Length: 135
Image (cartoon, rainbow, N blue to C red; front, top):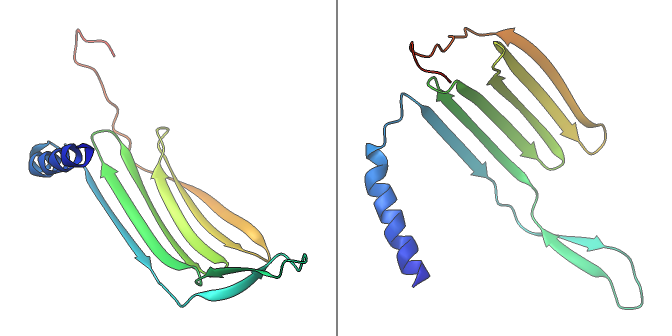
């Protein structure tokens, strides 16, 4: 019964999702995962019971996303790429104080995590309540 209700709610959300006003908000996302062949990795050691073995594939993916909502001021983006133990990425977001934070990062199993943080300015539009209304 629960699956029928969930299916019905999903259909209603899909039908009416196009009619919800977005106030000019945009978002997009992308994910690419590369599936390789499983590798055998010995885990632990010999403890009288034989070797423990784990199967996994080489971790490799790319993703990015972006949100732009001028109504709420929520403006941010991120992209990241991983190949094995090496991860590279960047993200940016508009902070309420008028600064845009831009972070480029890198990580691997030899040197650890490193981030380069920079700040720039973006145009801030002050929000004023109409006369007679309080926030």
